[in-house]
Amino acid sequence: MITPQTEITIKVPMEIARAYNLATEAERQKISTKIAFFLQSSTPSRKEAIQKLHQTMDDIGQKAIARGLTPEILESILNDDE
Image 1 (cartoon, rainbow, N blue to C red):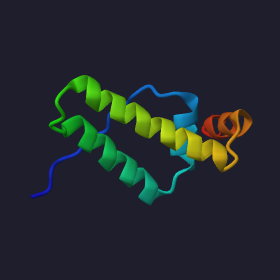
Image 2 (cartoon, one colour):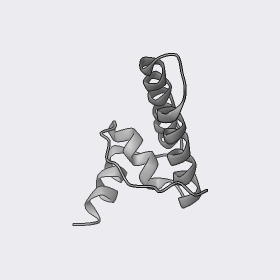
Image 3 (cartoon, one colour):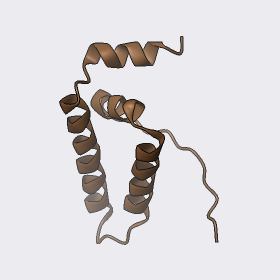
Image 4 (cartoon, one colour):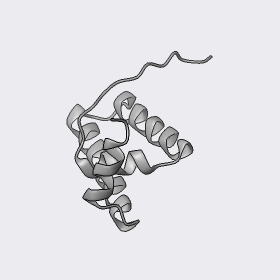
């Protein structure tokens, strides 16, 4: 059974947005799947699920920085649509 999907908007630190914008479509799908899992998980508390989500986003941001992403590059990416 295929579950219907919809888009949501969340505020994240700039580093997370950078990493997401630089990710491949396959990587973005993995991120989406992880976020959905965290939000649907039967963790003991909502606070724990949110902490896990923050850790995942922090990890993504650190990987983006390690790959050479800079604030200038991010700004350039974000301004491309204008």
